[in-house]
Length: 279
Ligand code: NAD
Image (cartoon, rainbow, N blue to C red; front, top):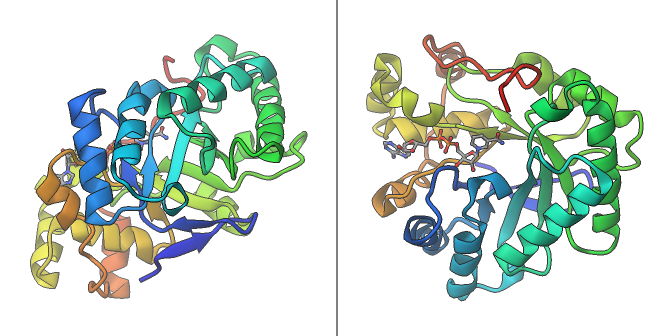
């Protein structure tokens, strides 16, 4: 099982990351992040809009691990799609995280509602600052999230540096074929958000049967599948025993047939459409 991926700029990234969406700022996000680092995760995914950067940053500091051993991602939210907006947003994230740099900075959403008539320009301008931030060492790599092919194509019109990562919803039964193919062709590492179906997969009978077959948990099978596909999953939990158990899937050798079954699992939630979503 792969432990790292290499980004298109040579930076290595741990092949599994710890998700923190909906981990409440304060004790919950702090304890969960601390537990993840203790359990062996070396890659933490947060975002300005999660409102928990301060707690995540405190856990990183209190873990006692050397900064360079931890890969930290945060994201630019929908109120910052401009050059100055991106500059201020990154500075504020670094301040909250109490870090001098992040390893990966992502444009969280390609088409914010407020700039729906000019999202291409918004992304281009934010990206221009992100390229500068890379040059001056505030970030080690830059990427995007929830971008579909037309958003990636639009960005490529002005970008000097291509995105290293696209973080999209990918889970059993939720497979965004077109954008996955595009990213594979363009050396963009594909991160899987919601790799446990945001909780949906645990009651699924097919997933339960596969878990029984492999003698593992549903979460472990889903994560093994994500790696099998070459994705980089970001599972989230705030419970220490699950945080630990979710990492224990390296011994699963999925058959091609079972991987196909998981890919086409019925009943997965639809992918939110970034061009029409109400934020
Ligand atoms: P997920 O698929 O990781 O599911 C998380 C839920 O699964 C948890 O709330 C928990 O209830 C449950 N769970 C976890 N482990 C379990 C276990 N072993 N047994 C039973 N239940 C278990 O969903 P997510 O948190 O939405 O996504 C993962 C991460 O991806 C986020 O935390 C965040 O970092 C990132 N994310 C990014 C975006 C984006 O737009 N870029 C959107 C959503 C999430």
